[in-house]
Image (cartoon, rainbow, N blue to C red; front, side, top):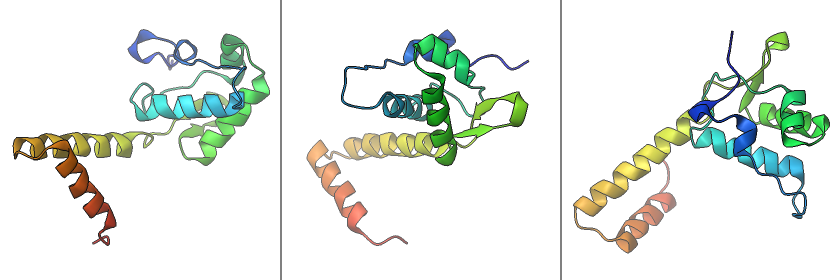
Length: 134
């Protein structure tokens, strides 16, 4: 049996804060927060997502809002639905972002070790971003 998503022993709904008083649609808030959880490693690839109805009940929002968000995340390649088995975080979701984030941290650490200050590091990064790809 696949356990409900509880990375860090905290259920998904406990890590999502929706504000209906904000000018942003609840589905957009949910989308952004789930993306952030996945990219930040809080939701791992292959993990089972809560059911649409279950997450909607936990968050006290309409099931259609969760369904719409899940469909959008599927279109983004972040979630995959496996028929009656449920919806899962895509195996590749967050992996590339984590690798790039790790490379950025390593680069900054090495640049600082070589004596560069933050402004010099930013100049190097900006220059690299303007260079044509290999």
